[in-house]
Length: 293
Image (cartoon, rainbow, N blue to C red):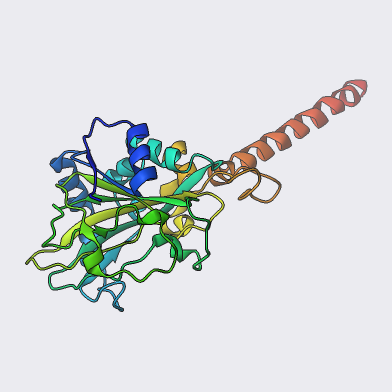
């Protein structure tokens, strides 16, 4: 089975259908190259300060830079891309809501060997989710071209429906090759791994993933995005990064406050307004006594 490529004009329903069937799909040139160059420029200072990985899975020649919501306006646009959100909603259609799970630039350096083939949903303590029950939908945007030579993400199409804990090898996979500005979608159950980089330059991708709102986020968005930055972000983005209830009652603050209200200080404003109302009422009550004097 080969990786299906779709045009940038594809609908969310078309992407969802391929994901349900294959567990992976590439949408070609969804944003212009210039947009990805802008993202690269915004993130360059942070990427330069990021240490290399410390184990074979993370990659000794690979840098993984997170906190992209706070660090890059371009990445905020990618997170909210309508086609992406529509496809995520389609794949996780039986979930009450979903949230941003992870933001990360993955820069695979030259001479980095291939990553072990794995499922991202193993991050949930290797819980054996039922076959076909999707818990997350992932994207990797090509910040540089992805080729077999430079470490394109390697996938096994259809493996989202395979048994759990299978030990696949690199030879079982195929590279998700794509041009800068393209994006590969894949299920959290898909067996995949970063490819080996045999080129002389880093292969750079922006990994943005989404998961059911009742699952813990891999990247702690409440600490990754400082409150002074969060308060200036649009409500839709804030709810996506976790300032919303998951399912019916998950994630509220103290006296059943909406988390977005708590961030915005809405309840505090209401409280102050209430105190003013009480003071005005007491003043009105005192007027007859004053006049009687």
